[in-house]
Image 1 (cartoon, rainbow, N blue to C red):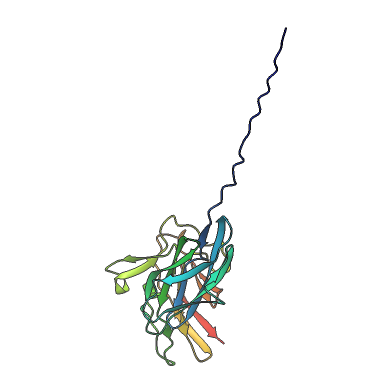
Image 2: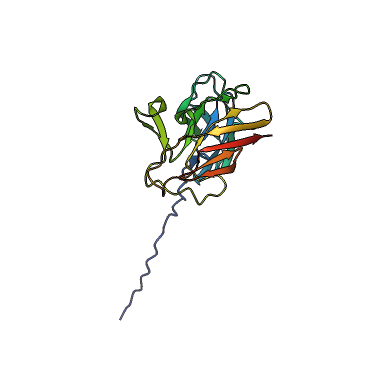
Length: 233
């Protein structure tokens, strides 16, 4: 009897590795607020997602009249990397809140990251014996503070922290995230009187803080006279 043995051999062609496409994400360090005539910085970060790192160049758009943008060292880098964006405003730059877009382009990929820049007027102190009056809605608002309209309010507008937006009391240094900031230029040392008007719905929603140069110096509660004397050194 005859037996034939057969063996089957399979030949496979190796598949070349698939090239990973270059991609990156673009982010910023947050919304910014300044008085016109001043400068502010924002950290722009490009994070490598896939592929080999390639050079990414940054451009900026959305600037108001009189404002300029520049990058520290250069406006390009290879992700993952960061660059510092400086925005300088002029005394003529319009006030208000507007969107600044940073676009990163490289390796055939374009990504955009947008943040809000709020520009306010600098308030100059008047000579001794005079009064500087500032409407709350002209300040720099930091969320959750918002501007509301009311025909009975001074200037027909007011600023409030919306109901349910959180409790800032636990922040013992700066009074929490909800803030209204004003820049008052005082050239001479001395003591100034501060007067503020506020309306609270009840004794459980009645506090606010006064901050000078980043440090909380006074807290107010229901029933207190909303006045203080500030020493300027």
